[in-house]
Image (cartoon, rainbow, N blue to C red; front, side, top):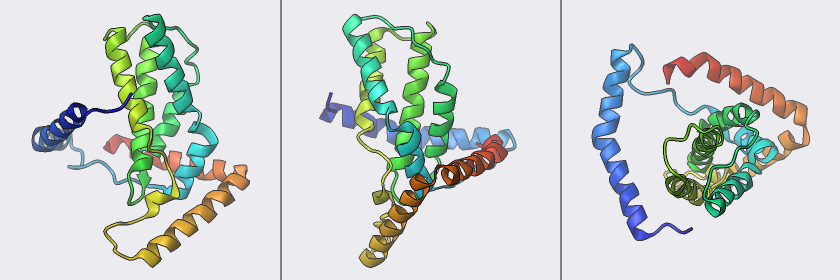
Length: 204
C-alpha cells in the first residue's frame, strides 16, 4: 500500500491541528498535574538504538506485515501468542527515545509500539474497530516503517558541516559494530538506559 496525496494531506492537517490545539491542551494538562510543560528530551544514544533494533526488533516489521495480511485475507482477527509483546514494546519505548538529529529511529520505535498494541488488542478480542479499520491503520504503520534506525540519523542538516557529519556517521557505525560484536556490552547498555527510563517515566 502506498500513501496517496489525500493521505499526506490528511496527515498534514492532523499535524497542524495537533500543533495548534492538541499540544497546548496537553501542556496545560501536564502543568495541572504538576509535571513539566514538556516531557523529557530523547536520551538513548543512536548507536545503542541501532544495535537494539538490529539485535531484537528488525524482524518485528515482517511480523506486522504478515499478521496484517492474514487478517485482511481471512477478514477476521486471528488469535496469537502475545506473551512476549511486553518485552518488544519495552524495547520500542526505548527506541522511540533515541537522541539524534534524524527522526527515523524515534519514528520506528513509536510506530512499532503502536502497531503491536493494535495487534495485541485484536488478538485478545479487545479491538474497538472492525477488520477494515484495523487493516487501514496497520497498512499506514507498515508504510511508515520504511524508515528504520540507521547511522544516517546522525546527519545534522542544520549544522551545515559535511565533514563533521561524515565523521559522526563513521563513529556511529563503529560503535554499532562494537556493540553487536559484544552482546554482553549491548545488554548492559540497554539495561542502563531502561533503568534511566524507569526513573523519569513519571514525567511523560
